[in-house]
Length: 384
Image 1 (tube, rainbow, N blue to C red):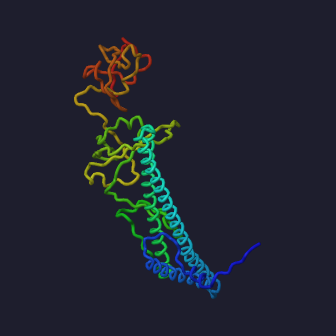
Image 2: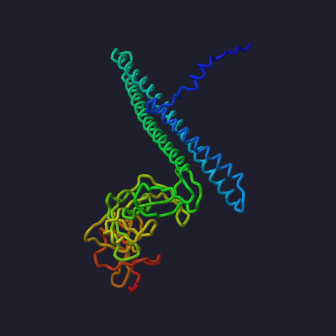
Image 3: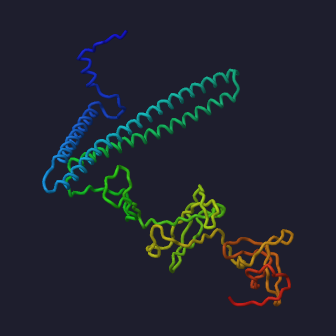
């Protein structure tokens, strides 16, 4: 059996006029004024949309097709500015409400954890629970405190999203009312600089947040390279860097940071490598690298270790030998014959090897020795 109830007209009218329970930092009067202004603006835009759509269907004359298409496009823009952005505001407000609920839940969890700590402390002082129980409760309270801090940050971000989408809605609706054919809508860049790339090249309707241009300041140029992660571990902070930009003089720089996260890259030989990015600041006078730009190719040599007055040989002269024979060796020229000499390496790079012991300064070595090279083999030096 269903029982029908009748609500008094006065109660219905009061409920219709009551404000929505939306969280806001505005006063009741201010919220009412803002809502009235937005409702008026929204109704004006929608009325303009209906008139434009009416012109779209009823236009006539020799330029019917051109006007028909123009009015249809303008009507679509008007509707999108009122519908899409209004939906974004609603979505942002829903996100704010969700963040507010998360804060309340985290606050309640923290209060519960703090109360549990107090109980555990009282029981521990009476000898009813072990110290480990109190430690566990204190740890849980600290975790809840961090959770509360995190959701409060999320709440602040949600408030920013609401403000941003409301501002976009106001600007789009104002533009829809005041913009005339042939007038431009100025878009200000958040930074000073030069245009690197035009992302949106053709004229079209774009949504809020779609990138249009890439802008950067050439005076803040930096060099970004990637090296093997094993090499990245050996790069010291503020290491000296020599750069070859394809002209003279060579440029100088300093390593600012080796990024903490590596990535996988497939080499030209099809081998997967773990590599890491290195950020380099240019220290040469700006006049020397002014011709460089974003995405330019440069050759880089990072100095990981520097020593004075050391013996060096071409890295192609050094070859491995059994550990019992010293591990590394070179062939030196001794009286017109090859002589294998064990050496101790201090360090090496792609072109040179530092010899700590085994080879005297000024000795001649054989580079790229063939597999048939052996002690006592007669050899003759040649100029390359």
